[in-house]
Image (cartoon, rainbow over the protein chains, first blue to last red):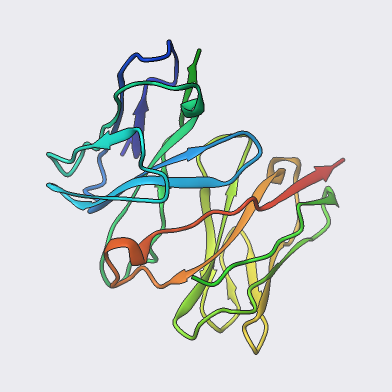
Length: 115
Length: 116
């Protein structure tokens, strides 16, 4: 299994541009998450999904959108990039059910700079 | 959610045990203690979790006090590769919870530096 794969790993955007961060997992996990991490800080939850077709907001959803059309994919969309969105973005997934310890599996991160 | 308090940083000599404390004085009866670590801006990695009893796996041991208000993560023989930020998180058990109840909230954690 490749686990959780994020693309791109690095990206520089100009203010006002749009882009999509891709996330895919091959573990057939129900739950998927997007976090952002600012320098020296912990992770903050942006959006999450409990299954295909279902998404919900986390702590810091403003300026972002998500969709979950398949179990595997959970893209994060930035519509009008702002310098405040400069951060490292992490996608994660987990399964649900008895016997699972609820372990979150993270991708390697996508570093986004907005200038 | 119960909040946790961790020291911002700690040092440990290579080969010695690293003991990372966490206070969670407002923990509820159905909340677990989870530990994750993040090595040099990689994605966080699950280490261990527990409810009441002490737990051990191939990576670490988790000691939870009897009143459950604090816990300690123990890395028995720290190596340079254990240098990372360690996060202590308190959350209801994942196993049968969906929606926002299963979400992890990460604080700033403890920066552990293992020195030669």
